[in-house]
Image (cartoon, rainbow, N blue to C red; front, side):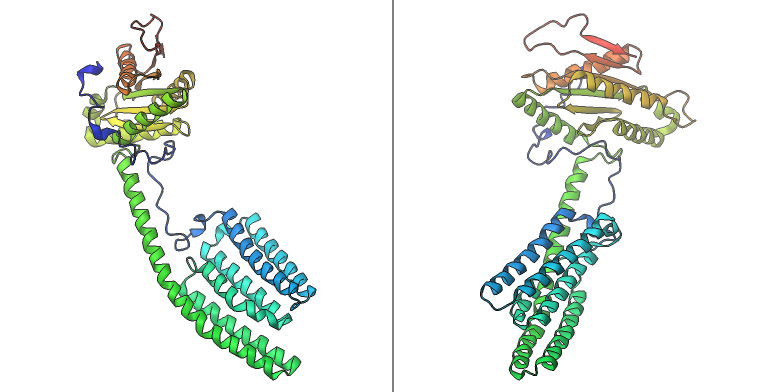
Length: 412
């Protein structure tokens, strides 16, 4: 049976472990890969790019830096304790507002850039409030304004940041005017005006220069996405959408090595659509292709997360069960067989579409060829036994030359 075919494992490029098995995807996903997401912050729903936890860590980290600087000012006796209290209240109110935004899932209706913009604007507004209460904090306003703007650089558009900086300068001028009206201190007015002039000239220049970094970031992001998409396309069968032969064979070799190293169980199933030539004769090759796609979709809906399902060739498929013993693998195969049999196939078919499946468990130390051969033999036993069934070829200890009479069981 098996040895009459060309040896599928003879080519040295069949197992490119370094690049073909980048990660073991959940092959129970939909047959057609979901639409590739746009760049974080640039697509319609870019908020998926960064996790909520990461956003909280970044925002709290920035608040912590500013608070540490304010504590240092307090230790040097240049700000009062009341300012620290106001800072704590503002930080608590801002965190509470953003917590409510995430807790109510309203952030899912917003683009990631809008959330980042709100964080940056809130930070600048809070610093302006503290600057109004304590003029000496203008020393912190300029550097932390740059930090806040840098936080939103990669997601907030450059024009928006420039507009935000213009609003900042207008409000800064307003605070300076209030200080002069309240204190009539010309020296303070000059000092604050000098700080404002420096911020007015430096902040837009910083945003424009960071725009170049933003464009570089976008280029690198899109290049990395293209590379990842090429890798994903290289792993997929173009006709049916599941993993292709190259990937599934590489995954099989990888899982064999893991089983040898750890001793965890490993199972393999070979699935073959029954009487596929008849299907092609009745529906034509295009109709046969549609049957293949439908079968692959049904099979992938039936496998568990972590299982690796791929097309070996023609109407034959492989299903790898990592860290799985024989009974759970058998149950999955039987579920797939029943779902294929009960599916509402096109009325042009004169008979049902069924599948014959052979499944076996890996014996530590055996070759991939021996492992595959046993599953393949079980599949042919299912064919010879009447098709539309799952046959288990029970493994024997390495070195045993004879299988017991009960080593193969058919499950109708």
